[in-house]
Length: 471
Image (cartoon, rainbow, N blue to C red):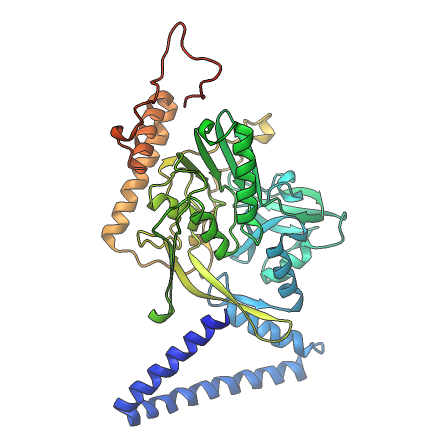
């Protein structure tokens, strides 16, 4: 991070020096006018600050007042920038190491309400039924409307084992409802593995310092359980409801399944700040087919992995469109115990697409069916439709897409929805169409099938206990 900041400052200073040599007097006058305007605004801030200190109905805490002003400045930029006080900075460092206290929810803010990006696996929130896209309106009966996000999160924290009731506003429900749970220490199980038939399923719940190492260990364990890599038909990388995390871990996980080529690039305000990461030789899955599962709770680092494997045709992406957070935040310490979190770049998949506010579109669109209602009271009471994506966040960064690119994306989305709708009419036909799409997505060719491959057989005498499951 220090290198990144120094490179940026160096570029700015060098550019200023070069242009001053060409048109020094004119630029100096413009700079003077700009500085005068800035000083006037800072004087305005100082005057207001003093007026609050002397005239507000209660004596405010000066430190809290200044921190609130700084946070307001940052949060006005976009939903992901903000000020990290000493407590918040400490909490963030703890979370990236994999253990912290709370409910287990990744949240953002929209229209003054706390919005759930994703619940974390096996946490009080997930076990209580919190879902991506839920709005949390109250905590223990106290409204969160209009509170800064950090303050709202603080209200959800408390002693381990203490009970908390949150009020949820959910798509399809015309009225809010309560969920009660007990706070707990959140110890993240970053990767879990299991074997389904002869397929290895790797569930990645977050990207922290432990993700890549745990993924590698869990993959090796599952392959051994399956009877060796020759017995494995393929791998499923489950990134559903994974809210993201550390960029370097997303790069490592993508590299784990790619032999070469670009993984992701970031482009900041200045061209010289752009960075690019490439894969190194070595594929933990040894070329076996892969499927990546995503949904609306898959954000940020999850989208980097899904986009990289999709663009390289290394995996078929299945599920629902991802969240669409395509921006990079840099944490910059400003004192010994506080920092700012500032959006410094957008990231781009290997094909050059930015998914900011757009998300990753799956190759095969498959919605997860909701459980059937058990009574009339459980029926949805309205057709409310709340946004569940980055694009729906107030102040979110936009994405400059040409009209032609937008039309192409709309056509592809319509085709996916049409195929998904076909399942209600003829599920087998829809599945056949989806398989063809999936094979096309990974550039399948018939001449790539090994000569020793045994065709599927149906009828009497077919199969055998040692044959891998088909389909």
